[in-house]
Amino acid sequence: MPNKLLRLRAEMQLPGEAWLELGVDPRSSGSRYWQKATFFPQGLAGRLYWLSMLPFHGFIFRSMAHRIVLQAEQLEE
Image (spheres, rainbow, N blue to C red):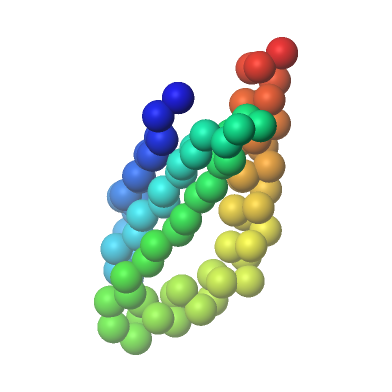
């Protein structure tokens, strides 16, 4: 399986530009899933937005990764 990457651009109104990348890398014992959130703030409002959301990102992205991996493992069965 070749490396796979999905890059999504946020279309909601934000004080900056945001992307979410989701990827899968093949491993000898299966695959490795990864995700990366990128945000380029615009001005002070963008920086304050990012800092205010930071405490929630760990929970949100960890939960999302867990659900994606569970779904992928169920497809293998």
